[in-house]
Length: 321
Image 1: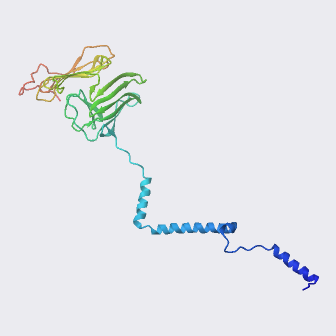
Image 2: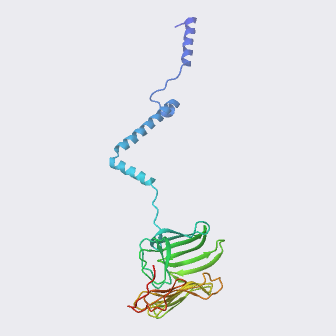
Image 3: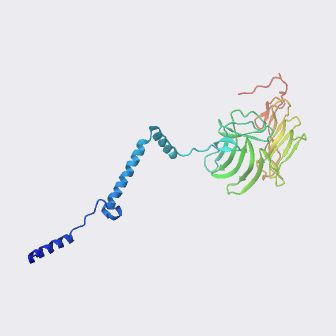
C-alpha cells in the first residue's frame, strides 16, 4: 500500500512522540528494579509493620507482667543502700564530742561505739566509754559498771583547732592497734601499738603458769617506759595504775585498797606532771579515801584524816552544805 507524502510525515511525527513519552513500571517488578520511589514506599511499609508488632506484643502482656516491669525499672533507679559501719565484726555508730572554748583551742573528738555493747576485759589497764548524757569520753580504771555508757569500738580521731593531734582505734572499750600523737605542726610526739588494751611491747607477768592471773603490765616503747601501767594483787584485785611518758610517770596515779570480796576501791590519788617532757617533780596527793570509800582528804578543800571513819557506827562530823 502506498502512502502519500503527507501521510508519511504524519506517521513519522507520531513515532517521534511515542519515543519521548515516560516508561511505565509493572506492579510485578522486583523492589531492586523499581527505583527510588518504590524503595521508599517499601521502607515505610516495614516501619509500620514493626510498630504494629510492638503494639501487638504490649497488648499480649498481662497486667501482672506490666507491674513487674515497672517495679524492675523503679528498682534500677533507686540508690543503693549504705552499708552499716562494722569494725572487727561488730556494728558500730559514729559519735562526736567537743570540749574547751570555741576557736583555735577547741578540742573535737570523732569516734565510734558499739551498737550492742559487750562486756569489757576487767584486767585491761583502762576501759573507755562515751557518756551520752555529758557528751564526753570517760575512762574507767577501777572496773566499775559502765551503766548506760557506750562502749568505744572503732577508729578514733582527736582535733585541736582543726588540726589532727591524735589517732587510734578502740576494741571493746580498750585501745587497740597503733596510736599516734602529733603536735599542731604535724610533728610526731609518740607512737604506741596496743593489743586490746595492753601495749604490744609491754612486759607482762602473771601469778600462775597458765597466764590467767595477771600480776603486772609494764609498758615499753623502743626500750623506754611509755603507756599504761597496771599492777594486781594475788587475789585478783587492782593495786596500782597510771601512765608513763618518755620514761616518767605522768598524770594521775591511783592506789587501791585491794579488798578481796569488794569492787576495786580507791585509797590514794596522786598527781604527777602532765607531760613526760616536763622536769621531774614529787607527786602531789590529791585525794584520799578510807576503807569504806568515804572521801577523807581533798587537796585545798577537805581534810578529815584525823577523824576515825573506818569503823561502822562511828559518828562522822557534819559538814555545812
